[in-house]
Length: 58
Image 1 (cartoon, rainbow, N blue to C red):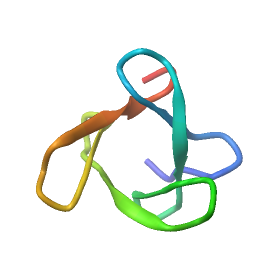
Image 2 (image 1 turned 135 degrees about the horizontal axis):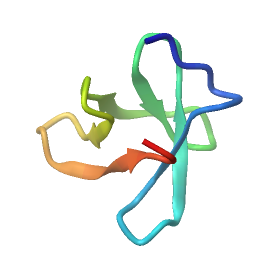
Image 3 (image 1 turned 90 degrees about the horizontal axis):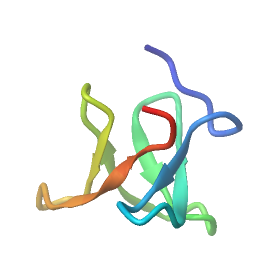
Image 4 (image 1 turned 60 degrees about the vertical axis):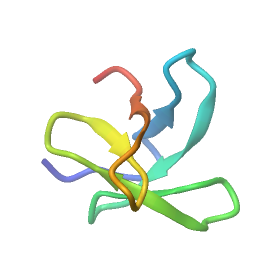
């Protein structure tokens, strides 16, 4: 699945937006700083594998 930053928003588990997902599955905050990645199941994790949240709507 190819994701676009304009359509894929990452939210924490309370629904607060924390960033976007680029086409490579990298999670970036709104300053475009790379903060983690998205697993195939839509869960966003940081570099240590700790859950950040999930792709909104996914």
